[in-house]
Length: 229
Image 1 (cartoon, one colour):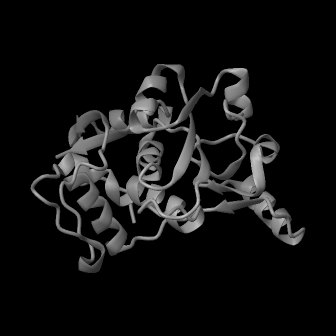
Image 2 (spheres, rainbow, N blue to C red):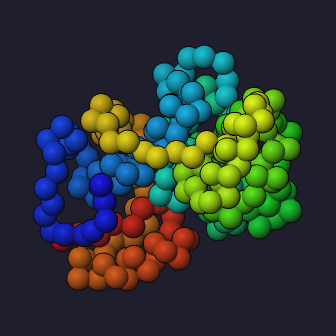
């Protein structure tokens, strides 16, 4: 369930999958939390079918260059989706290379307002960032659009409750990832087949885990920060 760093850790067998030789330890390290979060947000909460079937879904992915976000963009493009993504200016080209159809610098007026350059309304938002109020999302949502909040705070739960009480068609849904072996195996196979990649921002030895944590908390990593024994 997370919460620590060690050279070795004990895990239940029913929560583990074999790592193929084609997938390095560092590539696999990002999948159990960040990869699963992106996968479940898209498939369970947003209803995206990763086999490409179904009607097109217009998605917004915030903080798309980060640990969860960079997986979310890649996975979303396996389905029938149009992806608008936000990130910092230095990562615009990177997020485009992951497959995003439109990329916004979150510090520009349109980026701060989350407005799609092509004028699309979002059927779902995979919200990987923090500090964006509901009033910013609402005018950009389709009539049945939803915001899937991956880091929900008190205001998110309040909005969730209010929308439910008022039977609003536009919703905010907090997401809590659940460990599912079949989902993790699916992601490992995607990496093996070259259909998904773990982008590694940096690697640190276990002796410098505090530096890695500081960089993570800073919130500007591109992809995943890996701690190695």
